[in-house]
Length: 220
Length: 197
Image (cartoon, rainbow over all chains, first blue to last red; front, side, top):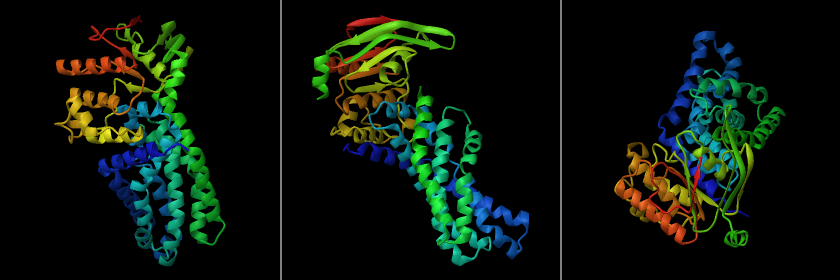
């Protein structure tokens, strides 16, 4: 078996890059909290109303926040020439793309999941349901980042492609959003969590290949 | 094993009947070249003639519009972009690619050889163009690869830097490696062949 050290190096570099961006961590968190907290101001702060839509609001905020820092993930590599180097390596480009997306998810995706309980409480969601729901938000968030990564790779050669990324990625979010919302309502015992997990596995299987195909086009 | 395969086929990289189209213009057509051990091929031509395009085809970054490229061994790539990230120090850059290639070369030793030991811990965005170039060219020393594809390797380099890179190219050829370089101006090393685009 080939040593995975190139992938470890890609992963490490991507972690460093996401971190060195500074706002890489804080920007999605701020966006997530801000978007979710805007809702009580628009629909009213009545507890019963908020608690019935709270988990759904978290899903929407999570989906949007996962796209906030997606623009630079592959665009930076294209601009500085690192993508040219990766594209000529023997290491399959889809594995490199997957490593980069996962690193990005750890830096800016996981903190969002950890933030769902406090924001959920502020939205009057039953506190007992929030901790189990983190599993669903975690699974769903990973799928959002994977599809976002595909969109980011497609838009890598487009200047100011942020909006394009949102337009490309949001339709891909639909299955995850549907099963995710059902799973958080049903709780961890329901079948929707399994469908959510399946949707995430599908993303995990398909997205790296799609992203690497897009990167090959971008680097050509 | 790679070495043996190359020996028996006697070329490091071979292009047959290459053609490139940009928009509606034919950049070059029916271009063939073969790089052997110890050789250096210099690609020449005015701006926009297709030197970089040819180099990208040879490296496998671009699909040829016509013809084929055969590579028998691994290659190093110095593109016109350095591959250095804005926050990356020469240390981080050389360590990273050293890891990717499973290199045992010491990053500091490479930096010293390339004359970038002083800004070893300085972020890429603060380096001068020449220092960035030297760092990128340092990658050539991290892992032994028979073919070097170089796009304007001397750009941004000072006199001493040019001599340094010339020395590297000579040493690489002496040890049986091959070089294909796109160049403006005079080649400071002796070219085996020139390809005019």
